[in-house]
Image 1 (spheres, rainbow, N blue to C red):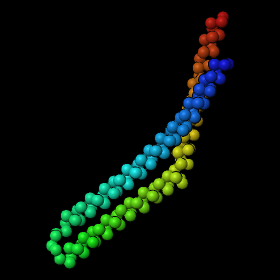
Image 2: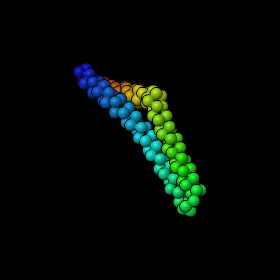
Image 3: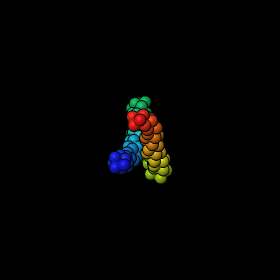
Image 4: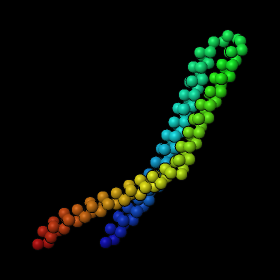
Length: 136
């Protein structure tokens, strides 16, 4: 009986470690994905800016400066859109996604305990007849 208590305590400690570790990993992974997406959006803005600037011929007249000003404004608008998406994704992560992560975390620990219970019961079912044969 004492042996079972030790295994149960060990299982509880491992479950707590898994709960914290797996939850932290899911949160960190999602935050990293949001950051990577933001980086790609900013890179796209820079690329579009370079393309627009390269297409503008440096004919030093009034239209050149108007085109450069328009290109600069479009780039700023692109950065602002990327920033809005970034902040909205982080807000969603803080306000909604944590519930999903918590549910997945609880489900993973529950499934692990259920699996261990089934293995334990099957083990008792297999070992019990073998121990009865040895006693006879």
